[in-house]
Amino acid sequence: MIPPSSSYLINISLGLPYHKVQITTHLLLNFLLVPNHNTVMATIKVYGSTFSTAAMRVFAALYEKDIEFELVPVDMRAGEHKKAPFISLNPFGQVPAFEDGNLKLFESRAITQYIAHEYFDKGTQLVIRDSKKMAILSVWTEVEGQKFDPAASKLTWELGIKPLLGKPTDSAVVEEYEAKLAAVLDVYEARLAQSKYLGGDSFTLADLHHLPTINYLMGTQSKKLFESRPHVSAWVADITARPAWNKVIAMRS
Amino acid sequence: MIPPSSSYLINISLGLPYHKVQITTHLLLNFLLVPNHNTVMATIKVYGSTFSTAAMRVFAALYEKDIEFELVPVDMRAGEHKKAPFISLNPFGQVPAFEDGNLKLFESRAITQYIAHEYFDKGTQLVIRDSKKMAILSVWTEVEGQKFDPAASKLTWELGIKPLLGKPTDSAVVEEYEAKLAAVLDVYEARLAQSKYLGGDSFTLADLHHLPTINYLMGTQSKKLFESRPHVSAWVADITARPAWNKVIAMRS
Image 1 (cartoon, rainbow over the protein chains, first blue to last red):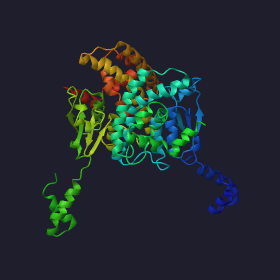
Image 2 (cartoon, chains in turn yellow, green):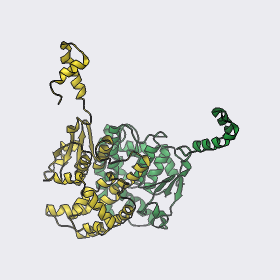
Image 3 (tube, each protein chain N blue to C red):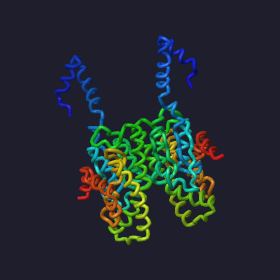
Image 4 (cartoon, chains in turn yellow, brown):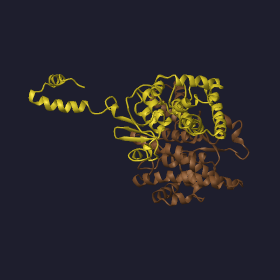
């Protein structure tokens, strides 16, 4: 907030007579308070749950960028995500949904891309402005979305979520998807032997997108797939130790 | 090529004595001939097959941008994509792989993003430079990759590819994935009632990425899912009629 004395300062700096000060102050305050990336932060809203992997992906990006946001809890056990008003924010009836002022988005990876580009100069740089380096980074964000996540999410569901819901784990599904995840992690092991992070020399969205499912899987039998590969194991230790990620985990308590 | 007389013109314009002309000409020619987007086009290579949906996605982007490229055929029936030297281009052993000079990429959607951004000013503009409009576009490219494609690719395999290979179609799988695709297309129908294209007012990557699987599915029983939804049907007719897409289809003949 601008303190009351600021009208006096504005008066002096503009050299205006007293009767114009009130109007000028009003206009200037309006100007000074026009939303920018510093002042609109409170208007960023994430609709979701601290247990949703997709919502956690967005929280992680926001904490890395040091951007304030409001979590609007969606009671998924009550099915709130499948009906109005939530369905107007995400027609697929899934969390998260995201608002930045008038902009409304869904799909967690589209949201993190927006955050990384729109708030490029704040916090951790999660994308790269060099077009060729960015192209390499995009290869690995696509690998996460197309190769890693289908296997990791299936295992998260079977081994991480179903037990919480009192549902039985399907061991045939676990075996099938652990084999798929192992094949993906073989490629990661080779990549991480050459490059400290998946997308390049620094931590980026290509790494960040993995955190929620890795977090679940490291609490299940599937952690052996990560721990048995030295470069993958070191990478997991590195990215899960990040302060921003630990703030995501702390949201649950 | 710069004609021989250019050394004379360079000489005049720089006002240099004759003995310096040869060196100057050499340096300037080197400068003038440094690869740019007009001169390096012949170095763009796509390793793949004209029947691969992922490779077709890349061909479509290149034709939309009016960029010359060389197709390096990969004999997938002989398993060339699963062994050296191809595996060094894509460690997952899948087509396509892509080269633009020294840059080597894989993952079709990362390649199209690179093409769209790196060659922004050529041909059709497939991405948008306004950050908020680009964010909306990204929502729909993610929807394609995460929601549409898993169902559409499964149906393409069962109904479009397996018959070509003399393998039997699994009708239970078809039923399951047609229901999933129908649910996605319900969301598309609502979106396309509000917006001419998925990503916004113009044709972009968000639409283009759908073309290969739609092309296969329109030749199968699953075409009913598209034809029964008026806005989806009009959109399919529009995007499949694009000259660039028809060049992709013509690559097979």
